Length: 245
Length: 125
Image (cartoon, rainbow over all chains, first blue to last red; front, side, top):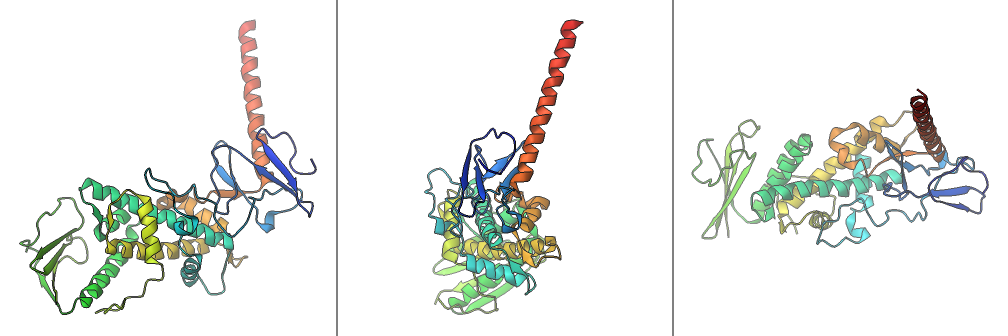
């Protein structure tokens, strides 16, 4: 054993010296978290850590642990929840394309700022985790209400519940535009706004629901009634009547 | 599929099909409405922008690169990002880790010695 840490390590360690003579040490502990770049995590009493294998920190004496193969990403994920009865996804399906993510990131920060590769991969994992998180919350609500389909309102509710209520307003605007553009596809569009008191079309209005959407189909006509609580900016009840051509 | 939009909205830059796949694997749900996939796509965009902006604020002015550590800081500080705590644990170098382990072992030793000593005193008295 040359160089590397002093003192005894209780855990099992693998020592390999690569061609350049740098000591690589992989420290294996049970139940450790996986870092974004695939390195094994370490547990001490209060914190969980991931060994830093960045070039800046590496030197022969530090004995930086490297996480094994570095093929540009992600090991088979433990980080993404696996639900009972659902098959784990292939690696490429579990994440959104890193190029798209990196584009969105770059637009949000000044042009000359660079983004480290492990940061991009990290965001990639976070994004998948975020999607899962929101979806399972929305799905729980769906189940509670004995519905089988997740709709837009479920997502918005989940956002609000999970601490992302700052997203809700912009998302509502996006949703409105999306619905309008969908209507546009179906041909002529009539929109009428009625007073807040008109509830003739709405069947169940959940007492504590933030949003209620009822779709009533009669004879080829689809009427959608959206009711928003008055504290929201759009305090009106909007009625869209789409005529099928 | 061309959308005739009465009002203009930016095209979605994230692949809806992939998002739907991830959603499907996240929960036991029968159906996912098209609207909800769209909303999740938009929300994800906002989320990425949010992460990037916050991480940029963490980035010291000496470096011009957004790094893993910046993201770890962001996740640490924000309440609504605690679900990411396991996805982005903080990184330390082995040297510091070993030092921490040694410290903890020393403390354990001390505590053991102390309790042994107290036992001896008890038996003596």
